[in-house]
Length: 264
Ligand SMILES: C[S@@+](CC[C@H](N)C(=O)[O-])C[C@H]1O[C@@H](n2cnc3c(N)ncnc32)[C@H](O)[C@@H]1O
Image (cartoon, rainbow, N blue to C red; front, top):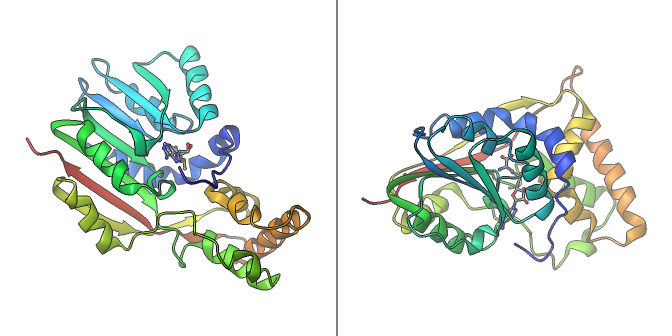
């Protein structure tokens, strides 16, 4: 993971991640899940999707991996209360080393955090059994994304450009066409790659602000001297409030979806 690792706050993430449900279901709905499958959830977070999948595979099992130890701790606590055929490991997606082990691999909202995309995609491909399938989705944090657009506007509002002059943007943001080519390069067959950006009504400024926080607001704030970080966040919040129209807070997030099989 990149050097400027954000502190994933497992409890806060659980609170806001429900908002992303549509994207999750769009991904899961297209996976050819069978009840005997061995499944990998690559970047499982709080395990929301791992548990959902585990409940459907009485005769198989799901392994959830995540690079954040507190997420894996949370998953293991949930597992004690709610036993399902699942297990969890702290592991970096760019360093996975499974050989032909899974019938199905999915990764929801993770790849944008992985700068070593090549290693990650190669590892994911190898982890599939021949004929096994992979599905992933992640947000494109490009200039059109409300999170990035709002942070960039805030930098201009407060004249903070000098703190970002040599900043290496922490997220992986491929052009969709480029990602199609990268994805096929690793051998995935019958690939389907597309972008969707449905409008989501966040309802309250606080909810949208929390989703920005989970998207990596801290990484912007960390570029600034300590004394300015709170002011930066307040200004982001003011920008979020300006986005309200007739009491609604509709925003569009571009997300890329990719599906493919390992050659038999
Ligand atoms: C937005 S959350 C998504 C969690 C989960 N997949 C879901 O859909 O609810 C992103 C997760 O990716 C994890 N992550 C970030 N970089 C990672 C990496 N290099 N390897 C494994 N996990 C990573 C974070 O710890 C975090 O739990």
